[in-house]
Amino acid sequence: MISDAINRLQEQINNDPELMRRGKYFSTKFALGIDNTWTMFVIDDGKLVEVLVEVRESPKGTDFIIKADAETWALFNEANPKPGYQDLTALVETRRARVSGDVILWLSNMMYIKGVINKFVSCEL
Image (cartoon, rainbow, N blue to C red; front, side, top):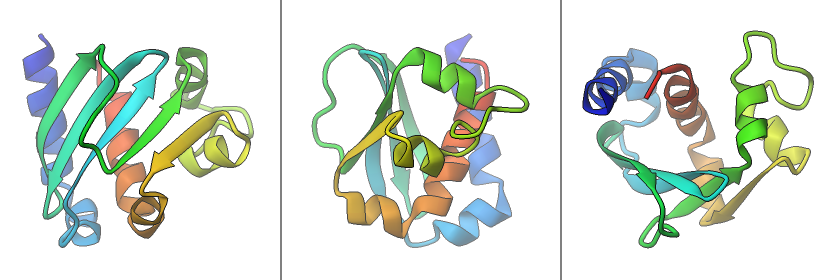
């Protein structure tokens, strides 16, 4: 069930001491786009408090958006991804993914966000 997977994801993120250290003062709402489907994350002081999965509408009220096509995310999630797909920053630098919105907020908290997204793509929703 999706709700069970979301609960596991929240537990993994909220119980990860490294992520909690990195996100201690970080609060945001951001969206991850896969083709035309969105997953929205609400973070409060480093804790994942809400995940909205498979939202079909364009996200509103988010601080920033990270978007790529489904094939890119699938290659990113492989056990040994090819160069250019191994890291969120590599996806952006090679223009396979796009970040829009408050890019400074994303850059300032990139290591935390990368940790959240890595846990998200490795869980099975």
